[in-house]
Image (cartoon, rainbow, N blue to C red):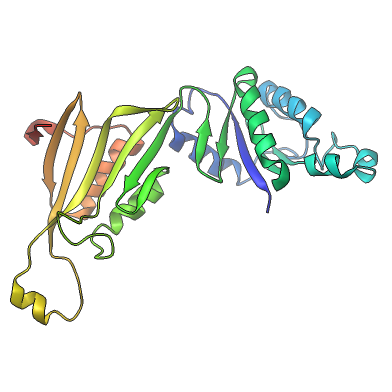
Length: 260
């Protein structure tokens, strides 16, 4: 396996990390009517970016590759040979692992000048000014870049006894956006509303499971924290999905305002 980077042209419709991931998914279907080893059919921005990269990380395939140079390449040049998939408004690059750090640093150093952004599939990080990146934290995971699919999967397992069993030792997920390395003030979070079991029920229960009465959902907005009780996981997922994907805030008129 190689060290991969996805390069995308900065356009008005790529404003969040979810936008970038959706475009990458579309890109990797490789349905464009073009040769992905060729710069023909690439936008001016992608063409300029690629030529700049080719000077330091030569392509291993395509019309811009030099068969003679590749055949006689020394170890240093061989390590820098790169596999490019070139689309109209994006590109996938596969670098040799020994030059991974060098490749990432160089790609970052020219991205603003070239008018592109970078997605690093290895850690989920996106590079590019002004892009709002989705991040989350759970009871078992530190701050991480993620997408809606990962967040939904975490919500689906909130009830698990492996994640939490009480309000003191609880499962939770907190979600927010980060832009240019700075987290936004607003965020959402949720946790199960654990119910205390009777001693007799606990004593004779064969399989360990949580007794849950809905979910506690909170949203931080304008420096104030608002809380409500959500009856079902389906309702909880809708609230969180709307906030993450559409940036649609729930109606907090009936929520309790929590003093911080």
